[in-house]
Length: 177
Image (tube, rainbow, N blue to C red; front, top):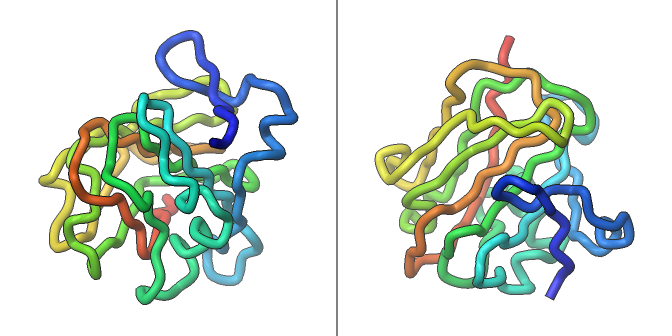
């Protein structure tokens, strides 16, 4: 099982643990805006009592969440449980208005209850969105932030156990103007 990387005195694990643990985490760089270089890195892990399946943490699986193909996907490879999360770390601060998680080919593979937190510095976090099943239509989860904000990282956390996997065929970032 991969090392937990997130340690926060409030309620969440955060990147305060040893840097050696950082090297063990699966990372993948993904393109962001057209014409840009690698805009963000994806990380998947579990903060809850149930660990995510080890295949969900592999670099090649994380890359499928933003490879431009609806024929591939990132998935938890196990039923969703509270504490499963995906973190988006930008290569530089970006002004973001929201996210779109497309799981259309597997329309039941979406979080039924989730929170989205954002950080401008990787240390101070604020809830920017919260959602339930109403946020998803035909496998497409639309997440609109309360207001656009400059962010360094975004975390989407599952808050309800479901007997379906969590899959993301394509992750889209809604950049603010």
